Structures are given as C-alpha cells and as structure tokens.
Amino acid sequence: MPRLPDPSAQAAALPSASVAPMRPRIAHPPTVRRSLRALWTWCLMLFGAATLAPAAPVEVGVELPVPARINTRSVHKILVAQFVAPDHASVDVNKEFVRFVRRELAKGTSFEILDVDPPALPEQPIEDLLRNDVFWKHLGEEYGADLIVSGRTVFTTADRSAFVTEDIISPATGQKVRRTRFAEREEYALEANLWFFKGANGAFLYEDTFHDRQIYEGKSNDALGIFYNLAERLTPDLVGVVAPQKRTEVRYLFEE
Image 1 (cartoon, rainbow, N blue to C red):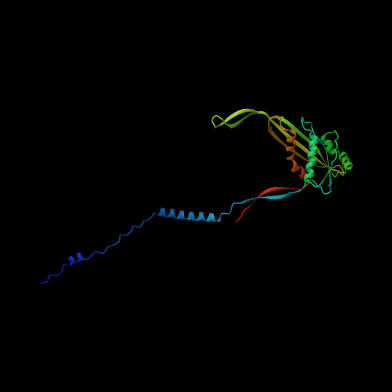
Image 2: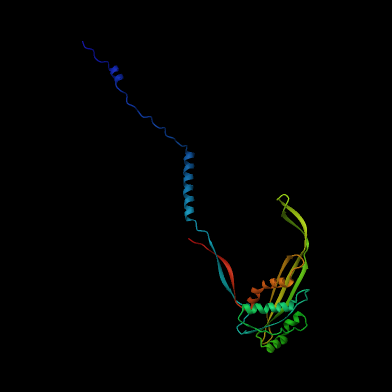
C-alpha cells in the first residue's frame, strides 16, 4: 500500500517567504511638535520681515534761503565808519576791523562799499552814540551813503599757561605712559558789536553781536593772523545782515 506524503514534511520542504522588517515610527511628544511648529513659524516671519523691511534712509543736504536781516531795497552805497576799539598791544583793532568789514561786504554783496577814510566817532557813551541820529544822518549826507556800518570791537590776549596731563609713547619701552608738563598757551578772543544806521535820517536799524575765542600753543603767536582767523568766522553772519544767504540742512530720504 503506497505511503501518503506527510503534510508536515511537505510544509517544511516549501521555501518560506521573506518579510521586510518594518521601520519604527518616531513619535514626537506633543511639546516637541509644538516647539517645531513655533520654530518654523518664526523662520517664516523673519524671512518675510527681511524682504519687506525698508531700505536704509539716504542723507542729503538741502539748501534753504535765508533772507537779509534788514530791508536793503533802497540801499546802493555803504559807508563803513570807525569802530570803538580798546587798544591792543600788537594789533590796530579799529583799522584792521574796518578793513575786514569792507572786504567781506565787497565780496559777499552787490553794494558799492565807499573807499574813503573811515570817519571818526564822537567821544560819548555807547547808549548816546546809538541815539545820535543827527550825527549818523550827517555822515549819510556828507558821503552819500544809504547805509552806515559801525560798532564796537574788542580783541584780547590772555595767558592760559598751565600744567597739563598727556599720554605719550615711551621711546624706551614703546608703551603708552602718562606724564604731566607745563604748557605755555595763549587765548585770543574777538568780540564785535555791529551797528547799522540808515543814511537818510540816521535811524538806528539793527545791532548784532559776534564773539569767538581760541587757545594757541606757545607765547610767540602771530596776533594779527589770529585776529583775521577769528574775524573770518564771523563773515556769514556779517554778510547775512544785508544780503540773503543760503543755509544747508540735512534731510533723510526713505527709498522703497
């Protein structure tokens, strides 16, 4: 009698099917998922802000007109009279300031600056001199001047020598060291009161005050050169009394 095959043996003889192993799925805790979403949202916002941010402002200079401080529509000729000026050891302040005012008005305006010996001023207190319209009217008539310029000018020199502390490089070590030394210095100061009178009737029109000072090293400085250095800083204000000027101011432009 034939033998039937053993089912268990046949099953053992069949090749077994290969099953690929499953990759484990990483499950993030809820707090981690919220952190990742927040980080992603923050990155998107940062990128959007960078693309929408306005460009840096551009700085530009703008010239603005500045009108003259007095009405000069009827002015054609200007007379510069002498100035009340205390004596200085090495500078004829009255003479040099008259020369300076004439030069700057001639360069900075279209008026005719009368080339005459500057008339002297009467010896009287400043308050009385400003109210002496008879005298100023007389100058206007005598010289044919529509406007008269005068004033008071003080140029001083003061000793400002003192011990000073400074940092130097030591030639021996090459390192910075601090030392104290006696420094000879001079301070020069210029103060000017400018007066403007109407030539037709001697009326007092306007007064302006300018002052500046500077300290220089040493004791043998050129006082006359320093006088003009200080005076020239007053030029824009001096010319601005009788002639329109331009003032430069900074403005900012924002580009899209």
